[in-house]
Structure formats: structure tokens, C-alpha cells
Amino acid sequence: MKEIKVKIKQMPAAAGLPLPQYMTKGAAGMDLTAAVKEDVPIGPGERRLIPTGIQLALPAGFEGQVRPRSGLAVEHGLSILNTPGTIDADYRGEIKVLLLNLGEETFVVRRGDRIAQLVISPVVKGVLALEMELKETARGEGGFGHTGR
Image (cartoon, rainbow, N blue to C red; front, side):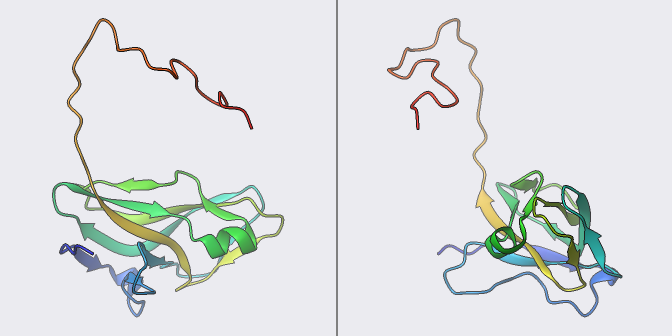
């Protein structure tokens, strides 16, 4: 697995919390923790922006993808509203996670809870070339649900 150096700043609100880390050797994502001062309840159908207390300096040509944690999804119906959330290489603000409760019960986010995962991925820039016609394919304009169930 290729490794790149990613600079990180831990803000005062995250003092005492662990830095994002891979929980297993083969994990693709690092767990992000909640840097909340007090418990944050999220009722069914509600969303809350949860701070992580970290800032990143991703190298040019890379992005950070903030994704839901599968355990929170299956056990509590918790997801991320804009998933995957993109952290651009030139963004230097605090990383925050927009949690959405799709479950039937209130979920309480507590300080230090692992709330999301961060995947670092390479980015390819597309160069658009305007054309009057595009080459036909067997699929054509078939979109949502075109292959059936």
C-alpha cells in the first residue's frame, strides 16, 4: 500500500483526543473522532454538524473523503448527509462531519466517539473537450433503473 505524508493540526478543542488512525492493518479509512464539548443528541430525521478538531494539509493531487462508519449505520441508522464529503487539497479549515440520523431513536454523540472515516485518495483532473456529437454506445441514454431489478 502506497503511503503519502499528510500534515495535520490538532486544534485546542481536540486536546486529549487521538489523531485519526487506521484501526486495522488493511483498513482503507482512518477513524475520525468527535471533538464536542458536551453531548450532542441527534433525533430521528435530524442532522448535526460535528467538529473533529483537526485541520489537514493534503498534498496536491489528493483529496480526503469523509465516509460513514458501517457499524454506526447498521446499529443506529447513522449516516453522513453529503457522503462522501470531499476535503480538497487547498482546504485548511476544521474537518466537520454532517451526521444524519436515519434511525428510529435519538443517537447521542459523545466526546471522542468515532463518528466517520477518512479515506485519502488520488485525484485525476478532467480536461473537457467540447464536441457536437458523442459516440453511441449499446447503453445509450439508459439511466436510473434501466437494467431492471
